[in-house]
Length: 160
Image (cartoon, rainbow, N blue to C red; front, top):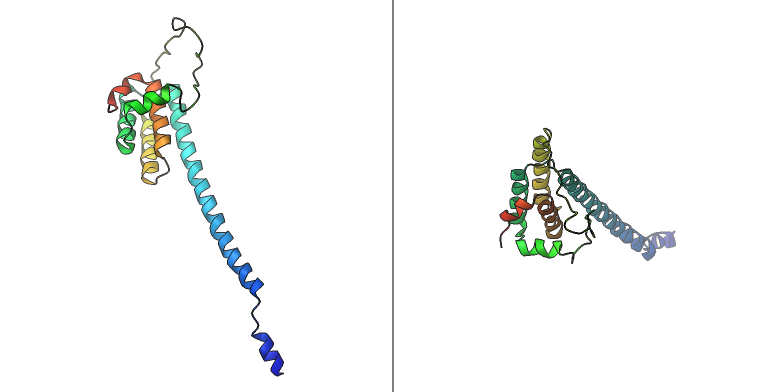
């Protein structure tokens, strides 16, 4: 009977190590999925803005408003956009790449009634993404580059 009491006080180190590793794995998995969800939210927002820019549903003043907001929040300047446009940071996605300059045509601007509501919704989502740190400097710079490509007059709102 005396041995039973003594044997019940024996601590198995493997059980303690297992519990410690289990807690550590829980924390790592939670952090992984939180980061993954944040990245997905940022990617969806960037995709929505890029798609809207390609369709040119924003007015020039709305494009300037996006440019001013992003450039002021992330201190994006015109040289950073020019460097990105030169093709050093990402491959060109222009469909007219390789054609002589005389063949390239400017896309026609269409007025879309729904653009104003879409702009306000995307702008609010963009503001909340900036506040939640979902969007980093490089993502903002690429968005500004896409805005400048789609709306060249918005380049004037960048600081030199």
